[in-house]
Image (tube, rainbow, N blue to C red; front, top):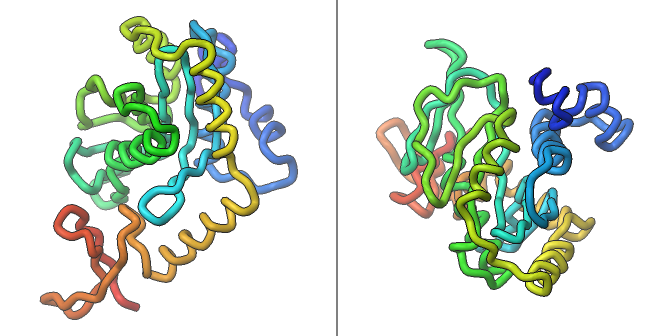
Amino acid sequence: MSLRNVIKGEQPLFIKIKASIDRGKTVDTGEIGEYLIEYALEKGSVPGRYRTFCNIYVPHRGRMAEIDVIMLHEKGIFVFESKNYSGWIFGSENQTQWTTSQSSSTKHRFYNPIKQNRSHIEALASGLEIDRESFHSVIVFSERCELKKVPQNTESFTIIQRQHTVRTMKMLLESRDICFDDAQFEKVAAKLETMKKTDDVAAKHLEVVQAIQAGQVCPWCGGELVERNGRNGTFRGCSGFPKCRYTAKIK
């Protein structure tokens, strides 16, 4: 947590976070990260007309894509992917897996967030019927990590730490032209409202999560997992190989 951001009003005190998210329920660190992004955008004096949306579900490739935070702005649609890891972060644009490292002996691999958010934008562009050039991907890591070796920012994606969210958004918006007039803005906002989490959508998403946990669906790309034979015996691999190289041991 950044004291400077708290003073600027872009980040709440931790006690306020706990009181603000579903009182009485257990909150995981991912939910807190998403809340902090939304809070920063709402309180950080981002210029122009905009609205934020959280927990948006969009049908994509036979499953539901869950999107952390979206900022609909008159200058475009900014899609946020929150990563609450600590330690050193390593990864390239085209690698399937990235790595977070606490030490030489403690490493954790996770799906490439650029690819992950790219699929989210693909789903949104299709669902909203909007050209993909109107979207920008923002990958947000926590203050507790160090972006040791990650790709440079491009016209299509930006990788930052959470304390730089507002400053980065102001810089991105300076270089963009208005792409939604008032009527277009309201039309997109109305569509996003219909994509918010509901009991039915949550149930469908739970089905997919359970299928992933049961070893039926690839957690990286959503493809079907199939049994394969390897040097060390049988394993489950993604049917999307070689584009997706996810594998899992058969218990």
